Length: 327
Ligand SMILES: NC(=O)c1ccc[n+]([C@@H]2O[C@H](COP(=O)([O-])OP(=O)(O)OC[C@H]3O[C@@H](n4cnc5c(N)ncnc54)[C@H](O)[C@@H]3O)[C@@H](O)[C@H]2O)c1
Image (cartoon, rainbow, N blue to C red; front, side):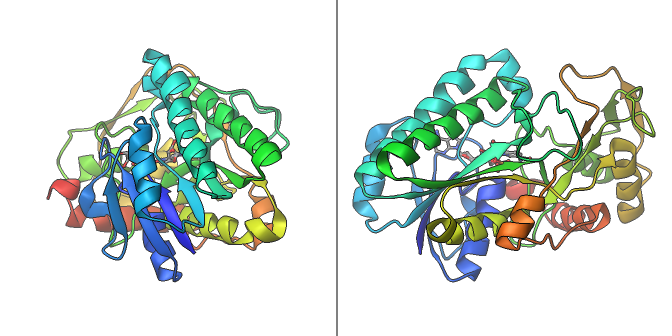
């Protein structure tokens, strides 16, 4: 298939573009490089620089690259904390950008769409692990924007026959030799910890150690970026057979912040000093996914189920790219 990957110069999009090429698909990456890196786009992919906020960029994209069979939509504002400061960037821009894309895509005859959704839809889960029947309580304008787009897809499905999958990922993590995590600002735990091991920060600040968890720190579900990439491909390839789907996507096991830190100390051989700060507003104590549905229906099976192999893969990339893509 010929797949359009929006945000394919970013962390998860570039890893997915790479997996798509390995699986024998053609890839067109569309990215404005607001966060992404041109060097992250795999060599076999076509790169188009453009902005989803500009409808004319999208119109040119489809005119110049006819025959797109499906879209994987990663391009987005992605920061929970920023969305609490600048809600309209999320509630307006994320939504309008997705609407621009969908409008032009439908006009061009595209009827397959995979959305990067999020675990931030589950701010108040009734049970753990979290399955697809859990009540939706967005934890921020970021989460709300993803839920809006899920609803937009629902109506595009009913009205235009769009087949879609909403993949609600938990914490994307880990790297591959050819693409890694390089955000500015960096907000994710594992790369921040590894910056300490690389001597780029003195210590890591943990947000609270008085949560109702075994060691007092928050427990999260870390899923390797390549496993996410494979889930996208399975979802895309099954749309015609199974129709539209929504899946939660994580490893199904939780690791506390202290467990992540201890594992990183073991992997890197560095003491990685830490301090404990106050809790961060809006952090639930435990977030772990049930990925039973996607395992059962699509045969998805993570290749990196344990935190040590995830951190090892991230360490390998960060050690080789201490300045990220700027190196
Ligand atoms: N990283 C995670 O743990 C995580 C978890 C759940 C969901 N997600 C979602 O997955 C997707 C990818 O996340 P990521 O961590 O790879 O983010 P990222 O910032 O690395 O990648 C997003 C890419 O989209 C591009 N982009 C942003 N706005 C654009 C626009 N208007 N037009 C064109 N390109 C634009 C950026 O330049 C960037 O390359 C996002 O939608 C995010 O919300 C990420």
